[in-house]
Image 1 (cartoon, rainbow, N blue to C red):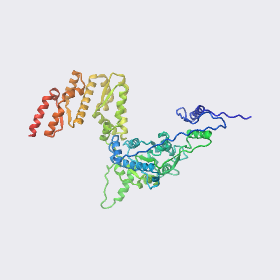
Image 2: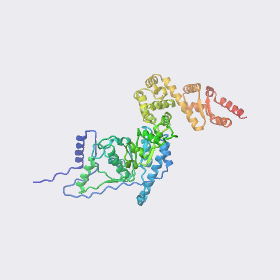
Image 3: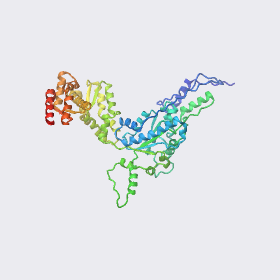
Image 4: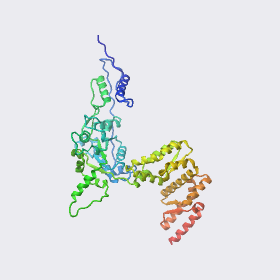
Length: 524
């Protein structure tokens, strides 16, 4: 006697599948099959299933290279040549994609995809640049480290997984995914060492796998090692008797690889030196940094470094990012829209605490970060080390605001003790910083550089405390006539920078009138 085996419901399948995943990978991984079944289906019964409507994407790319660079300038400082090269390559690529999107016949024209290789030390903004380009254009972006991949058939991720991740980032919108950007960091690690014996499963094999993707191929979205997709395929077959093949074409996906390429400068230097041998040979300075040599990199240098000729031939655009100096890190902290300082301001604000970063404090953070030789990444490390105990202690105190000064950066624990135990010291430090910020705003608003000297600063603090007014209110009262008066002096003498003594705080209008009279005398 035979009986029909009960077909499990969606909930039972999900529970069974999750139990299988738990046994194999532990409790830390949760995978959902999604909505793969309709009503319960009896054996032999057929059900018409309406296919989900395909998501569409209308690529409206109308940016110009200067538009892209201007946008990147808001987040990444310096690297001007890198920004220009990236902006041009991205515009060329997406203008071609738009043309193919609007006119399918254009796809048959000869066009070399503008895949990019970026060279530069860690922490100079390579990933940040590409991430913001993808955000500006509105296409999905996948970043991965090259070291996670191995040749197909070996332990490790398959390069095809990059395409599947791109589809996931596009919320399963295949049309949008085929215009995405794949960014492969640490790409210098997949260069084939010259002395390797046998198969290099994580070097040459990965290069060959990427070569196929960078050119043009169709990738099956149901990966052979993807348990969830295979389960969905099995259930789809059970439901409809067939499995629809899901593929994505990589023709319009932009590939960008990057790395520090340590040692590449020696290859370039050797080649350049050999080409200059002779009576008039130029001797390169020993102080030349890698970026200077990277500017002269050629495909042969990449090949000598360990890349396959076919692989590097699919990366025609070479972009070089230079090392950052103290001034650059200071500028990032002070002016970049993506500054880590915003994160700390928000973190303290959650506890009702206002943190002010002084100019000297920011510079000291930059100086400590440069010592770590990891570029802008070190800024987070320095800030975390300096402010860790502040985050722990201050929320449980009555302190509502404080300043990160150079002293805080140099000796955070001692300054934390003073801030929490000496209210007058902390209040005065905050007032001094508020005065500095008022000076900066006044200078920016009126194109007149002003500064209160030490005695004037102390007088403003005393007046603000006595009158129970804010620093801004006191300064506004003092300087209410000064914008017009200082502009008159500027017209008469050309002077645009002014230092205010204590007398300006005590008798602002008489001092201004005297300065104006003197300016007319000097003019004559």
